[in-house]
Length: 130
Image (tube, rainbow, N blue to C red; front, top):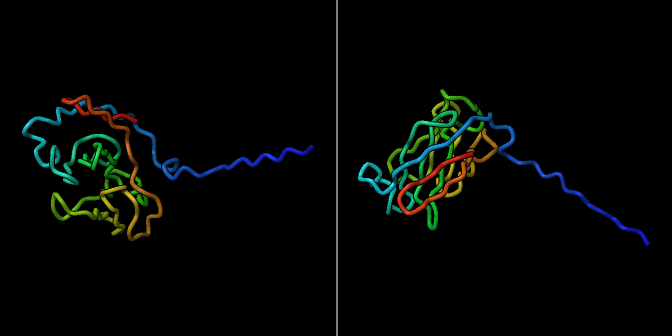
């Protein structure tokens, strides 16, 4: 009897991103966060991570991405949208574009999605960690 074992060594697209400690507690239900709380796909920028953090109100969860472009990977080259509900974020250095819904690249030179952090919402506080 022969057993064949196939082990997949998938590449985690986030492995190339610089490591940084992220732990934020955001009182997301406060008026300061009206742009995102209850505003589907609305987002707001916060300090943290490498280039800052983008907080997004998704369908069933909050999403947190690092603002640092995954092509440049530094605090100078960051992504932002034209308006608070713009579905496309653009890098100010290389012009890579990312979709706010999942952080994927829509136009590059970047070939990896935005770095996504873990989120947990307890009904009042949004926790963001890595």
